[in-house]
Image (cartoon, one colour):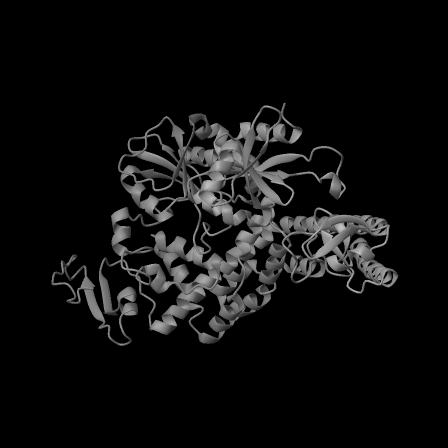
Length: 620
């Protein structure tokens, strides 16, 4: 017969049979049976076993420290495994919880498309989870893409011949497709493929899911007309997140429609030839590496998004050029870039707060980002009208920064209870309990001095062990001088440890105060997290403003350093370039070695020039 804890594991495993189940037990995540053998093999950790009961043999198990979860998740997910995280959602009796078994629940399932930390998550790029399904009409596909860490959601209907280009732009980490449907044969998926019931892609169900996630009564007003099949694909994404990481839906943004009338569609071959993001010629050879001067992760992601999806409408291009031109003057540009340099990733930090995975250190980073906004806003306001518009989201979050600064220490621990989390003077109950723990340490020192005097053992000391609790320890050679009320507890090679009743009584007081202090600090932290989450829309606007300002000032810095000029856009159909320079080629040559060249295409010149010549002859 299974023990209560094993039965709990069996029940959770039955809910997620296709995932490796990480089962939180105290300070460890344990894996059992086949999961343990998988974890030991993939992670290189020790595989052990424990008895399963009379005549039932032994059960394999392997565990990892809870604070190293992200590191091991990376390895398992990169190896192609889904990982279900079963956390303790009630306090154990030793921490003041109710008697009996600790309640555990699977809080999320981690896959390539739902990672939110670790090395698998690119700081400067998106982590797209994509849903793809056939759309009405011949050779048309519904495509929805979501980055759960930033909340971005985009939808589109793509022609079959343009699908590979969009795939290359997104580079998705995981793809949801309806079963048993066929995928385009020409499409190289290059990501984890997850098949879902075709019902998950239903349009009516999708509307309900999206409205519920976005807290709206209707999707009207989001510009999704004619994209019904893509809305169905977005609904499949929301349904998948609701099953695997429901907390992430709190971070979902309204869907963004992508239409071919608004942006230039680049096919996969063109993207490869232009070497926008990747090249076979090593580091520094792609266009993004040559052009990207952004200073924040938010700006870097926006820059890559824009570079991969050029605008088609002249008015929108001119508006972006106006934004760059605002920061061509050095003083506002450098003032802005000083305020952005080293800024934490507010966008993804907000995502962690909304998804419930943020701890005190993340809130301190939120504060550090918000404290930079006034200087960024002042620099933007000095740069003129286009910059003022971009800076519109940089005000309104001052109170959030002040609350975090008042409530939390500057360097809190990752886990509440390991060190001071709440700033002294913020919460009266925390201060009271912290005083008790400080007094307890003084009481321990007093008891140690008292027992040294009573026994005459000058090297006697009080120690603590996670399993045995507090103890008295003296050298083995002096153990025979221990009084009768010292009960031997543990013999070491060069020391003897004893149980001492007055010390045990003091231990009970100390641990009670420590647990109460941790609970009080946890309560303060939860209140601050709730306040930050409530200010989510203001922080979202601030992150968007930072990203836009970063991109504009980065391109202005590039233009100033390289001597680039603003193009004149005309509707003549001609391309006239004087003194043109190739940014990638010039970057890879010694200073001054690149020879600028002119290009004249279109009326009255030829529309196309086919330039031939041997390698290294300067065709670029």
